[in-house]
Image 1 (cartoon, helix red, strand yellow):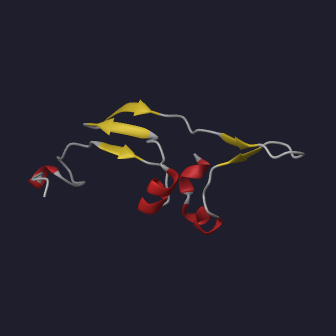
Image 2: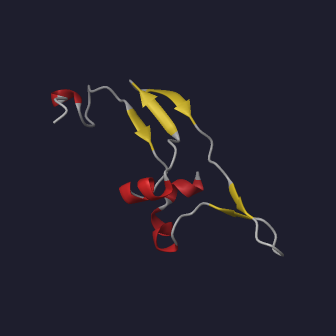
Length: 82
């Protein structure tokens, strides 16, 4: 469809250009609208974004940090440990 041919996919000799998204899967990317953590172009990291911190503040309770990962998907969210 994109006519990328042999230049598409991960294999030796191909340009290592990709975007790394901190998510447990494609639906998580859309649901949480995650920002890329790293952008790699031709094998070199050209951009990186530190993890964002969201604080929830409820009346009468101390602020707590949340990342909006569903409990059932928490086990596959290995990017959280970085």
